[in-house]
Length: 88
Image 1 (cartoon, rainbow, N blue to C red):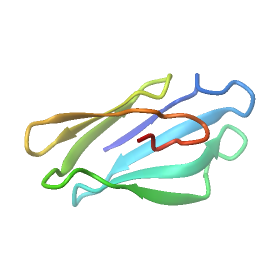
Image 2: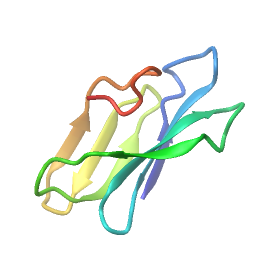
Image 3: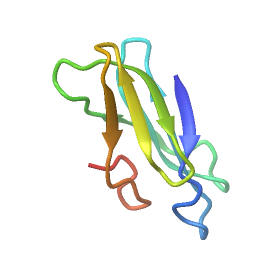
Image 4: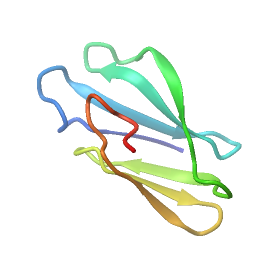
């Protein structure tokens, strides 16, 4: 699964959040993506809670990230920002 959002977090540099879920259920964020640098620089694995495997991810324009797990849970990432794009 893939989701692109976060464009409302910063109007100055065209910041974007690109999130993916791998075939094995791991969650990744592409770092340093913007309109000027659409390829970004590298992938950062975002740690999932123990005993949770992601199957879907969704990122809104204001950076809210929701993850659906194989176990039937919905997770929310807090604190998404330009300085901390993976949140906490």
